[in-house]
Length: 96
Image (cartoon, rainbow, N blue to C red; front, side, top):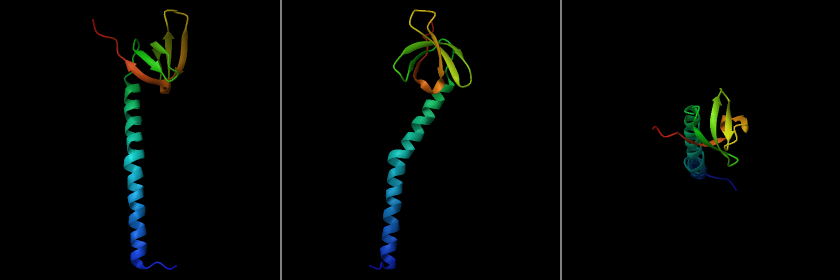
């Protein structure tokens, strides 16, 4: 079946609408969330309480470029180095 020029134009418009839909519904919100997560990771400091992606709560005791050392629980010997990207939530200590 041959498409006329108006048929091609309609198909192109339809494809543009689909691409725009995927951009605004899927891609743009994901980029925004990634940007917010990177901004949160940039503000990490020693003494912050964090929640890891595995569900553990801990306190940061050392920060480097890509990794942090997190102390879990009251046991001072439970210190685990992990990537910054494994941190999902940061809670700043309250000023006294």
